[in-house]
Image 1 (cartoon, rainbow, N blue to C red):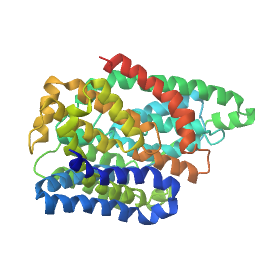
Image 2 (image 1 turned 60 degrees about the vertical axis):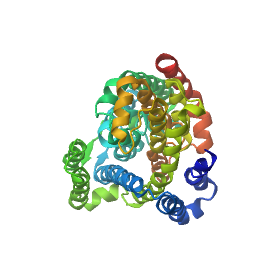
Image 3 (image 1 turned 180 degrees about the horizontal axis):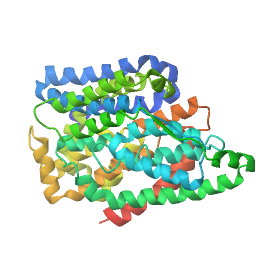
Image 4 (image 1 turned 90 degrees about the vertical axis):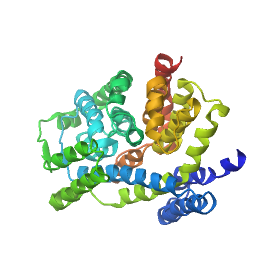
Length: 422
């Protein structure tokens, strides 16, 4: 057991590096994250090829990574070709409606796509009175919790779909929780924004509420978004789904006028970083998944509530996609539903007799990704765009202690009490 646990160390080191080094050694990390990610991945790959002689598990994981990055990358490219030009009318009610629309769109564009499309108009429409909580609630609702209803919405749910969770299962099982959390956050935001709006100088309020033009540029990319959405349902023949996603991204990029990309400050740097880091994550998490499957009963995580808090806490400080897979594997190991070489059969066994565990993992992994900047990929992306626009954004610890801890954690505790306590 101890020897097997040692091979989880590359996974821990990589996720710890992603969490700490961008804050402690930003410039060093920007130059060397490729070597850290791929270097740790190669250690695990060598272990499985030369010591365990288990190349099939590496092939299986690489196929999952390819599907995952095709979805994330295609959404990133297509959403980068859409520019919403919003001026004024940023009353508290308009802001609430905007965030609600963002929460719904996150399930169709992904949290990354919705964040990319909406964060710049969000900043522009509130530019006269933009505060830190505008960034925070956007991350809470659009970049994380909003995408909790479909596999397209957030990476953990897409990985669950690849493992065999039916596409509409999460929507059917989670929508009451989603509605409760999003509704509470919108109500709280409305109160805070109303106070802020009343404090703004009259001249500023008149400027913001003046009727001005709303423009939607790059509308043809909606077709490519629909193309990506439709491709998710394609399972055969192999690689057709991913091919359609890549085709949509290519056609979007070559048909989008350059001024739209320039207006969105579009570049491939963010998705390049995501692709490299997740290559390392997918490789190094293989031993962690195997260990959890084998020893879940011995580590004392047995109830839906424990799976909810466990997957949630790890998702808030690490990355929620591999966290989802770890706890899904732990649930299969706990109930003995794992079938060698067939994860879909193992998930099917959970869905029949222990569906509460998948629901707990789904909610915990997606919702808790909003607790810190490192909980979900779009969080840092939104902060970076806001910093570039020279508007106020909270630093890492301010985000957690001033906003997440007093706002999100009590809400999540209520969700646990109502849905997962038993």
